[in-house]
Image (cartoon, rainbow, N blue to C red; front, side, top):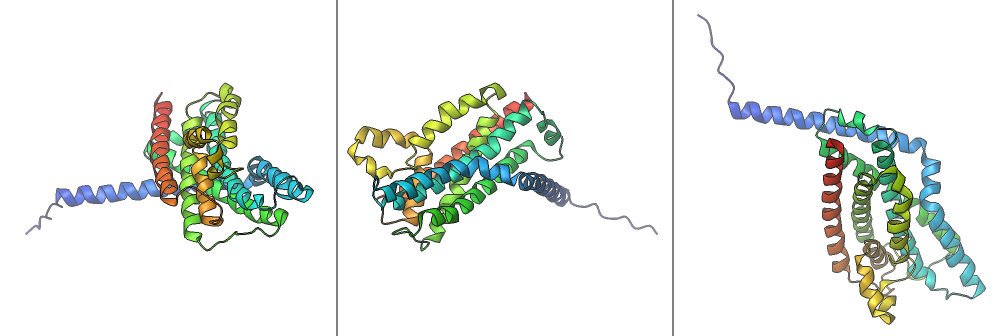
Length: 279
């Protein structure tokens, strides 16, 4: 007498197939991430020069030379260091994603190989953002001890609010990494120089990296005009967590703005990436 196997329930079969697809996608995502990190590790010296040279030069001039020459007050370094950390974090996150994306979509067309990977296309965009976040965090970790070594003792500097520091770092890196993906998948290679002239340079000088936002109380128009600059919230978040004695923007406002930035920039980045990849 033959025994007929009971058919597997349809719902269970669909569920197991979905789990298998998710496992395959996570495996491919991890492989792409390892590959990009391996490339970044080989190019680490160039990465560090590209992302931390300008902040360190500014620290050397405004945090070391000018205070000793008497042209700026010594407590200026207390407000300066968090802003420079924010600048290093954001520049690294933007550049480490935007510049390779411009090349991949423009000259090398390497992105076509990525799009053939057995993984949903939004996962490829997300992997690029994660790589930018990691490189942004590394840049901040390198600048902090170097700046501390150059400046010396910093009044009011504390790691008591380490949880806030970590949250600001991750949210800021994510927002600017996604912004870098949006920029890299939107502009053409011929416009890369224009990007730094129109977007990055104004963002740096009006992003409260070199002065606290509350210092603009003397210029009310500028105080509210700079709120469109996303760097303001990362710099003020760093001040609120690392140098809380320095007047700064309210912490709930900072974190609310950072969360909105992450959502909006991620949506714009994935949307632009998918449009460019399909087109």
